[in-house]
Image 1 (cartoon, rainbow over the protein chains, first blue to last red):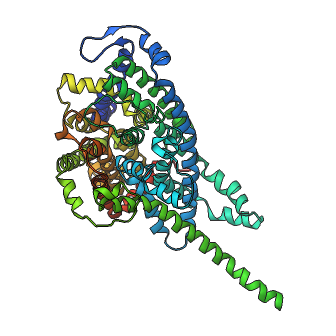
Image 2: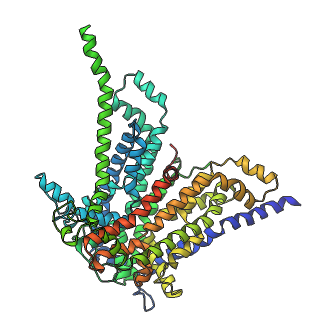
Image 3: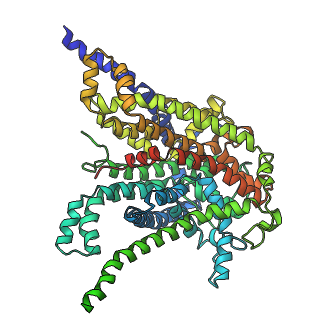
Length: 309
Length: 286
């Protein structure tokens, strides 16, 4: 008698524990996802009822919306440059900190702190410090007789400026790399020393294979972060151009010259500035597709990410 | 003999040189990391006119800039709103996410793997993907735009990143503990509250801190829902508008910037250990 009753009780218990999330996933993920897909095939300005227009929004975004391809190109640039440099720099800083015999904890704290600075605050600080005319950085460069770039005000330098900001905020990678580096078994290094391995060989044949899963994890989450890259380029563009923020004014996004446009900014530009809801939803779906490809990469079998027991 | 004595200093000085080189690099790098904070601080106490010059060192130390910031724009209001958003949001996140994480870590049921995959998918989802229908829902159906409620209410329904991190940690709680509690007559809820939660305090603190910082720093959410009503702005959103909307000078902007950074950095120094343990939780175990 009690046997069939148990699974039923468990189902109820499972549902009870999972209920907040089940409701949340339905209301704040599945429903809006379906609605986004539907709206991407309609003409909708947010006020009058949506009308079905088939693939018109898709064709508009791909062929006529002037910001789509610049944003795609910028994203590619950011993924290649920022993700790669952050991996290399994070690894270098992590290796440096674990080698320090004195003050390791102090330096770890010091290098970690900028990561916590609110992105808006960090971005405004960088735009100010990298101000081409009177900023501290160009002042110092000028005194040293070095060239003084236009930084956030020059289309050729705006993405490198964002890269500097991203490298300043290296704390997250430093800490996960440090944890992984400290996990490398000591005896592997001792064995390598007995075999007469130099510093490079030790790194190449002992450290690197051991920390590879973490590197892959950091690379994939780094790419996903670039898909969501919004606050820094948005605030940098607006502050550097001196535009008024927050009053809902129509502003050209991606200052200077579209060089800091990313896909999330297009959703904002189309949906909340131009009231072209359908086209905004097209961009949202493109973003969704990219993100899910990389999420699937993270969860692929054997990655250890889901830590199935 | 001569060869030996000549060798000894080099033999001893090599690790010494390495030590000096490593620490020199560490100090140099430390300066690079700290200099932005230093320049922001120096600018924050300058006079209006001096911020537009190439001088890096303040001619006069105008400490009253920090007082002026409070009377500029809605700085005090933004503080109140941010504290409400971050604390209430974090509390709701923890209350709603802990049972879900516990179930995903310790209950066996069909679809558990699928549920985990949905958690990861939503965690990786840029908020912009679903923002259009979400905004229409909150603004047109519930008339809650111009407030922070569209950002706070969903946190009562679990937050994917928090669920994921908590679940990773809860997997490490030995199943035997839970089974022993069940045998002693604890209910599932009782086992979670009395056995698992006390054991998981470091993880809960870390996840709570992460969420608090995330909400404190959030820019996109407040931009979408509160831009029409400055009375509901948060620090991050208000700060972005500070320079231009109020015709504020750079010295006040830098003072505001530092005031927005300060609590976050202060909390970090107080809770550093919990924080860094939490970061390592996000990584996979090699």
